[in-house]
Length: 450
Image (cartoon, rainbow, N blue to C red; front, side, top):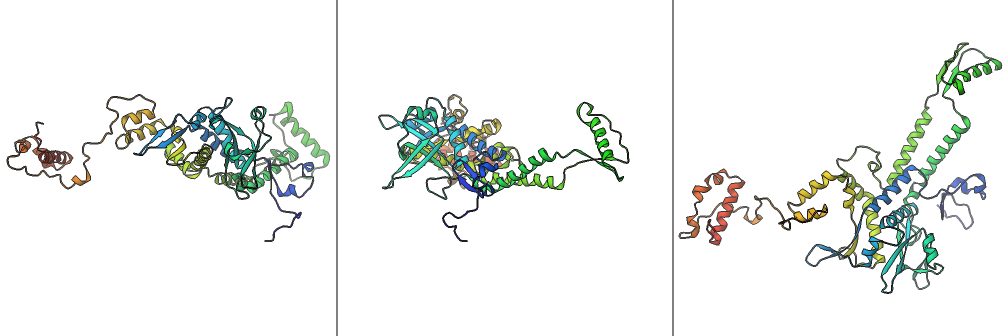
């Protein structure tokens, strides 16, 4: 494949600043005068809108937290940092939900999103503003600067005529095939599919508007003259249009009314549009069940969200978290990091949440930790882990038979034969437990009364 020379025609689609132009339109120098237009990113169809909205609205639902790992294990929340304050109130006219919604939406519409950080006298970020447009610049020494715009509030408060250093710019970008600082949206991967479906839909709209396909056709084997055909059409219209709609037309000359049904071509068009929607969902790595369509539903809401997190949502959350971490100079996971909590996505699945917390308190969580997850207060004795009585250390698994106590030992007075013979002979969990307790008492010289 030879590369086109400078000035030579290149086949489309063509990537422009505000969208993409089809190859058909690009053949003409005056394409805008011929009725062609640039297809904006994110406005190419209902499926694209559904995918972009699903990502942006879901990310906006996840509350963020600034976390730091502890030397002995675990982690603690940091509530005194500038990141914590920004996560609560990024500026005076937006909430963090507004900010994340617009950043994520712009990220998947155009492949990149920008934010401007305003610092105080201590070099801490005190405000973070979302910007619609951004252009990176590389200085001769390799330093990176940005030209930002597209926020009327910021433009009226600050002077953005000078390049802004990269340390004060939040730049989240997707795949960068053309330039390391220019991201591209997954919409471009489905551009040809969208162009094909758009052309098919435009053709159908033109057909229905101009061709005006009727719902019925009149057939006859007789030869009719022009006046007869006109008279029959008028008589039919009198009973089916206007004030006479719903009347009963009387057919003569052997006429038969034949309804116009969906043709095979219309069925192929429906299949084409369905295939296009599936390709768009594949490009966005979006399970169709998230959008309420698709094949077999998942067994639970948790399983559905876990599948999406494994496919595309997890990447989106991590990508945004890392971009924030770079702006706020965090050390990174696991030492110090930002986390957008996805547990908020299971708020509607109350039963599954309670079952998970109940199972977790038997091994991992204390009752107080589980109650804190449900915003409930602490209870007495709730700071200890709960285990079942039959659980024993692995090293004691083969030592459940009671050892014979030494002569003169205090354990010799223990009335084990009278109190517990049935449990020991049963060989069950209770017998093993009682044997373990007798063995422990004998080894530690503790009587049963103690």
